[in-house]
Each structure stands twice: as C-alpha cells, then as structure tokens.
Length: 319
Image 1 (tube, rainbow, N blue to C red):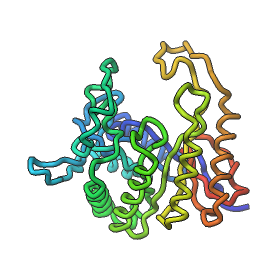
Image 2: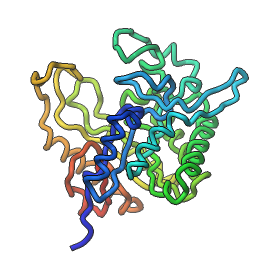
Image 3: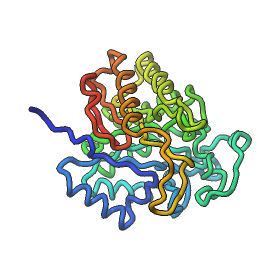
Image 4: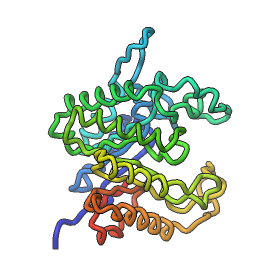
C-alpha cells in the first residue's frame, strides 16, 4: 500500500553530554539495533557554555569563546563527542541551534534578569537564565553557526549531513527565549543564511514552539500565535523553511515539575490524549492554511504517533 513511515523513530533529551556517557552511548546503539529506520536525535544546549560536567541537569557544548581582544574562537571537542556517539550509532542528528554562549550574552542581561539561588542546577546567573537572551551580536552568531556547520560537514561528510535537520532554537514563545518575536525572526533569518552559506541544500526550519499552555498557570498560550507569526514571516519574506516544528505535551501536573518519590504521582491537571491531538490538529491546519507550505515536512514532540495530518498533505516526524 506504500511506505510505512515509522513516526516513532526519533528521540530527544536535554543534556547533550549524556550522548557520549557509557549508558547514553549504549542506549543510542540499542535504538539503532531495534529499528530498521535510523532515529532522528535532538539535544538541547549545543552552544551553552560550561565545563560539560554539570550533571544531572545542565548540558553544554562549550563551543564559542572570545579572547581578551574579543576575537572569537571555536572548540568542538565536546560537540564532536556527542555527535560521534549519535552518528556512530547510525542515527541522524536534528541540530538545535541553542543557546546563547556566555561570551555572547548581552550587557543588559543582569538588569533584566534577577538571579534567585536555590536550584542545584542554577550555579550562576548564566545557568539560571542568561543563556536564553538573544545574542549580543548576530554577526558573531552567524560566525558560530557557519563554523559549526562547516566543521560538521568536514568531520562527517557533506553527503551525510545533507540528511541532517538544522533547527533554530527551542520553544522561543516561553522561558527559553527572553527576547521578542521580532528578535527571534531576525535570529532565524541570520541562522538560515549562515547555514545555507556553507550547505546550500541544508534542511533548515523551526520554530519549535509550544502548544496551547493556558491550562498551566502563567506559562502562556503563546505558542500558536508565535507559530502563526513565524509562518507569515517566512512566507512573506521567502526566508527558507524546509520543515516546521512544534511541540505538544501530555497531561500537566500540580505542583509544577515536582520531584516526588517513586510511586507518588502528582494530580493531573488536563487530559493528555485529547489535549495533544487538539494541539497537533490546530498546528497542522495552520501550516496547511498557507498554500506555499503544503507538503512541507512537519515535526512535533514528544512521541505521539498519529496520522492526524495526512489529509493536509504534510509529512510528519515525531520527537
């Protein structure tokens, strides 16, 4: 009847450094052995700064650095270990360009963000939130993107990275992004231009927005509006968009992100399946409302296998 698309063949996780630990590498190899389809693998924090030893909840790639005179230089040691583990297990990376390196944090960040110690993963103002500010220089950001893409193409081969997806940021409609929509759109354009300058046929996309979070306190409901603004921008300006990404979550719980002993579940605040299907359908309909985007690859996360978008002629990948 046709190709059987394995919608579940993808996985994502926060700490990119777990990729090359003994357990992480073993898990990646196991995933590569149980399915004939290579997995798409997506990690956070490829550009955040640090020692790469901040377990359990702080991942870093530690790529970008500036010398005393402000000259940028790049260190791919950590990133190579992560992608070597992913590619070596037979998988295809989704390269999530994020987040802002310490040396690209804007000068106004301290006045706009009040650091409140208390979390074991928020070692300083940078880990607590400065990484989510727009980079102080888009030209330096483009240098970082261009150098990273060129390095990956050289290390793994241009033919292999032609299958990679290059995604700009993560969930910019909530706390992952402390800039405006306009600043994100400028970041997206700059990132795409830098990527395509190295790989003209690179698959670029975004914006990895959230679903409708109105049921979760003050966390938003901004995702759908942000996604629509992003799609309008790409359509009207002809900025390349090879795939559209958006997220939906299952049931939310109260208290928010609590750490309870095993077996002590929180109280669910919203139905999971109904909520996720509603959000996926709304996003796919939004994409399909632009005639120029019909047939565009769409990805949503987390793993929610359904064919809800097939009638809209969009290709679906699931995280």
